[in-house]
Amino acid sequence: MEKKNKGHKDNNGLGKDGVISRHGGAVLLKIVEGVAPVVGDQFFSSLVRSLSQALDVKCAYVAELTADKTHLRLLAFWGGTEFVEHFDCDLLVSPCGKVLDQEIYYCCEGLREQFPDDKGLSKLKIESCLVLPLSAKGGETLGVLAVFDDKPLEIPPDDLAIVKIFASRTEAELERKLAEDAHARIDARLTSILSTAMDAIITIDGNYQVFLFNQSAENVFRCKRDAMIGKSFEKMLTPKFKSLFEQYVESCTRKQELLCYIWASEGIAACRSNGEEFPVEATISLAVEEDARYYTVILRDISEKISAHSEIQKLLIERDYLQAEMNAHNNYEDLIGQSPTFIKILENVEKVAITDTPVLITGETGTGKELIAAKVHKLSKRCERALIKVNTAALPAGLVESEFFGHEKGAFTGAVNRKLGRFELADGGTIFLDEIGDVPLDVQVKLLRVLQEHEFERVGGTETMRVNARLIAATNLDLRKAVGDGRFRDDLYYRLNVFPIRVPPLRERVDDIPMLVHYFIGKHKNRLGVDYKKVDDRTMERLVQYRWPGNIRELSNVIERAMIISTGSRLRIELEDTIVEQPSVKMEDVERNYIRKVLQETNWVINGPRGAAQILDLHPNTLRNRMKKLGIER
Image (cartoon, rainbow, N blue to C red; front, side, top):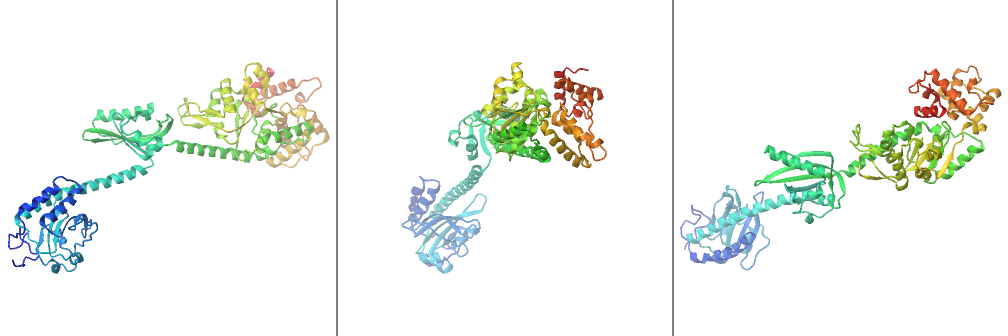
């Protein structure tokens, strides 16, 4: 036969001579025997080996086009005796490039002369080929099925028809493979997203059965994925969270439409595998697949977020306390005195300050108990943190617990936000409870727990808070008597009274009065912008002899008033006869008369900027207590 069919084609994909015969069609039954029992990736390997053996050719292969359609990527290559792993085919110089026109290409001989730039043909000494395009249902070329031989290739039309049948089967397998590869890439990306997502992602059905449980879900709920797949997620939901989920399911069912999602930003919690509840933010969304409904819950543990927010709140409030301390810095340093009694107090302050022992400061109103507390804190190892102060007498009885321990949002009417308590703010520092004798009995129990166990719960909360705060308390009451009267718990009293410091009234430290007088003159001079005033001996004697029922606070007020009204260089002190000590007058009588006089001048108004409490520099509740004790009535 003449070898003139070199690469030309007809409508059947055969040479011009029409029928080219080498083997009988029965030989191609070997192909059926080779590929019939296999599917998937094994099909390609079985096909090329069976095809090569049936046609008695040097090699055969199946390959898919690369994305840029310039090269082939092997799926299977039979080299006559073994499978070939690596093969590079540039479609621009290869006979396989003909498949881009979606036509069968056949060359019975002289192939290397037609494609001189194809190095693979020269290396294998290839003379002939049959190349069939593998196309998708939409017509796009996906790959190639090719056979090559180092001698002339003759294929009868019947045999070619069988090869075409298997090419169609190969197209189906290739489409399946490409679809599976695309699905696998999507799964890989999805798995990567799910495994690296910060949020816990769980997919469940309407019966709470878990289908998907990502790595973050394992971390958040503290259990392995294998332990959750196919199991109920219901135990991980708190009643409130479960109710939210049920409402969403019911809403989707009732409206017969897919709601995009619902978002719960606060106020719900989930349960870890050990039963521990933790606050979360969550979305719930719905997907329908083949009439089955699946719900995806995406949630984030916001424990650290809440803790960070609380810590920021603490720092901001502590900053305000520190600023207030800085503004009052001079007052904290102003422990003025040289009397033996006062020197002894300072020595005790230095001894106890370096410990964490609770301190109970007692003394009359105006003796400087707060200054002693500030000094203890300043000399302590906690001095870098703020001194958190609470005037218990100024708090309504119903809000003392909330002020001490804080409250959760919605804990009571008016609790619109979470509030940090003073003990929480004092963590790592010192808390000073002034007028501790006014703490209600029900709060005293919880106060004792903080002192002994260092823990508490916010009002309306269930989380137990740990706190490390040093307690300093002060009172002008006789707590022993309050214990006897049933107004103060004895166990709390003994817990507080580990290291008592009694601050004496000014009348017991008369040696310090001259020093204090000159100190207040200098202090008020700068603030009032007046010249320094001298104190003659007679005036100083009057000041020393006076009993000072209001103690140091009253002395400061008297000096300030004198600085304002005095003319010239000498201090003019005005002390009413009714409040100057008389030999036969008791201290209670002096105090009673003085308070009554101020009340009469204010028309018995206690509160407000012009009330008696403001003039006496007393808290209104403290003034009322003194009036009750002294029997003062209108």
